[in-house]
Image 1: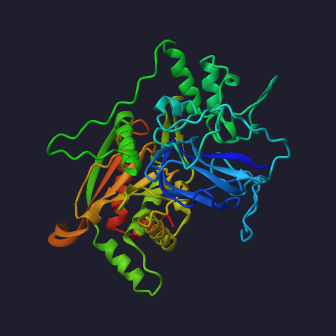
Image 2 (image 1 turned 180 degrees about the vertical axis):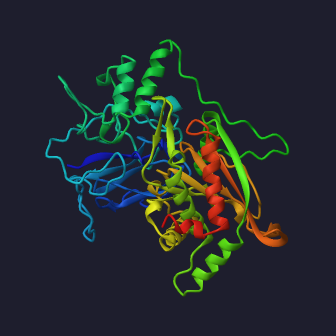
Image 3 (image 1 turned 30 degrees about the horizontal axis):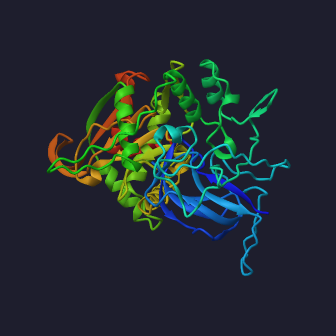
Length: 463
């Protein structure tokens, strides 16, 4: 007899709480193998193909293309143990997944009895946001082509027993995050009373926050219905702030709200800088980009002024300084502004930096950047000169402490060796978190960058 298992939207990492269904890769009735991608979703950071950890026959899909689902909401159900078509090469398998996304997937099947949990009713698609937070169906995410059993229970089975949970007298509590346990402990919430909405019943932070909100409301107060979106007035065009655009809006607003930033700038004569690049590229080796040379200067400057390669832990009231430079760079794509991160930029030469910038830029334009490509930066370089502008006051990429902005390099009148001449001039802008350093440090950093641009030989001292 077949066992029907429910696969939920897994935690995709880095605080992502929802994703939009872009394209279904399977139909109801299809046979899927373990770790076969079943849906392509778009998060606030990247496009991701989500593999299913079960093998079997797809019996239901939840949500049409374009539907936004929270982490922990059902994606599909799979009948495991169904008789496969004769020409099928996919085997029904519950032995565990080797394809790991953050928060789900196993490298080896746990040797334990699997128990089917059927304590969540299936919604008819009219669920409220509160229902979703409690682990129910997302609004508008009714199963496609699936019928609920006559008793109203979910047509699925969810594997209980989450490894890594806190042990109690009644068995393990399916919670991994110490932040979730601390949040519950601080508010006197018994985690044993919660039903997790994460993979395999994992209790997520959203589950705890929902329970705390529900406890704070009068028992007789019904959950308010979601408010419809405001209708556009004549002459208005309204665009939802979601996906990458919404993530950018939230991050910039948070940066302005939390970081006391300041900006300093300087004009620099980049004539020798451009001549040095021309000489490098004339040598016949792979071409070196302007951005790569600027990045090399940035890493050398951060070695001299490490205060700017840091972040502020506001809760602990501490400045956290990093030994490695993971350099983000702003890139404009058809899907919006993204900031890919070059790992260990301080350990790369100009050729390696050029290649990595090119790889990440191409991946960004093709929508192939992963969450790992877009997170973990410690300092950002923003070359807005490609848009034909001279200057800007960059907004810090929260939670970093600084960003260097570079304008266009153009011929301008300049006093050179006591005489007026036409030189290649660039404006450099540094926005920094005033909590991590004072103006002297920020000015020293910017002046060193300008000196390296004006006299590239200065950089040779640090190589």
